[in-house]
Image 1 (cartoon, rainbow, N blue to C red):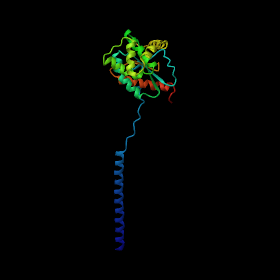
Image 2: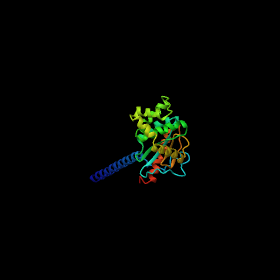
Image 3: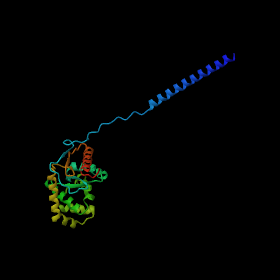
Image 4: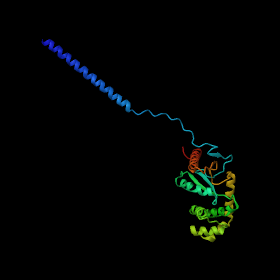
Length: 241
């Protein structure tokens, strides 16, 4: 009788252990299922993105590059005219870019003389630039012309305006405007426009090599093209690895 009870006890223990193992096994399966369901999917291998901007559509490469004479910076030439309404509307966007521009980039504004009435403004800007006050007065003069509808017909009127708005001496301004150095600057500005094939304003040329196709309806796109070309030139010049 004792043997029978012992055998039954052993069988009950075996069955109990088997059931417990089955329960543990089922629990392990449920835990594994939860892990599988919560496991993050492997990231997909992305194909290299094509350039957002393309030659011929967003910019053109000049056949004969203009020498910037600067191997340590990417020069951005902005060609403009003060009485040009498109230039006036583009300037706020360009000014915003100027605040955030890459440190490797340098902006050079170039006033052009596409019309006899533009000559006095070209002379005025280059005179102010020679005296170190061009940037101070740049936006003010745009506003004076397009918002206050002021028309300047001779250099003396501009000299007076610059004196009132920048504090420079009017006679010194007139003397500089009539100097040989200023005459040389006027010729250089016109030559730059010719060499970089500028036919309208505003126009932007990156590093004397790439003329940006102006998109007056999407100025942010234009800025994007400028930044793209800066990056392109920065690499080609070896300024970054």
